Image (cartoon, rainbow, N blue to C red):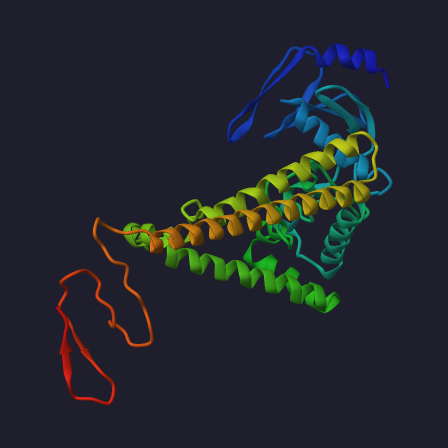
Length: 345
């Protein structure tokens, strides 16, 4: 194809993204627009080739990458050229499944084709094993073609079953499709049914949690159990662990960038931190012993000192209070085995 001519015409087309709406198009080229959507607009280049012009380069790159993954299958249109914001590919003919089911029944044969489509998505490496029925086209020979596959390789959320496909079929065809799946792939049916039930339970839980207002004061008091900075010992240990984790991650990245063996790097880092931690432990033990000795010496010195002028230190023996504590003290000493009390002056 004449890519030079195509580039000249593409430069005369302006496609602008609009939030939650189809793109806006300003077409000053001779190309006829076939349709537009959220990501871009499609123009006819020849009888068999169309050009999709995107509103931004990111969507263009994702679409091209997704189409490239499926070029060895019959499910995707063939790519002919790519520019910064456009992709030239085969025109996908036929009728989309949405329109098809308005006049035709969902047969086991079509359900089988849809399952095979999902299998191909999985085999070529798509992240989202799902597709909307309006983006799936039934060909004259009964085969399927897909368009708009950018979001199959990039999506902010991915469901573990073909949720978009099932919901787009409508309740009646959804139930019929699941019946066909149950007959042809019973284990797959059980897994999908499990996720469908989990989704239903999630909706029920949400309805319960929605009107519930949390007790902020109670939560405030309970959250104190999660605080870690008030206990100095625990705080130091957790801060040390955090610093070690960050250091290890960043050091591994640096060494990988230099072509080093990651296992060897992590082993050396672990050895370093182990030796450092052992040194810190020995240091803490020495400080604890030093403080204990200092406290013992201080207590010993206090016992030997007089608390005030004229004080007589008390002599202790096995009979408590045998000696006078100071001159002139009067006290009673009951002598063991005798009932006589003696008073000293």
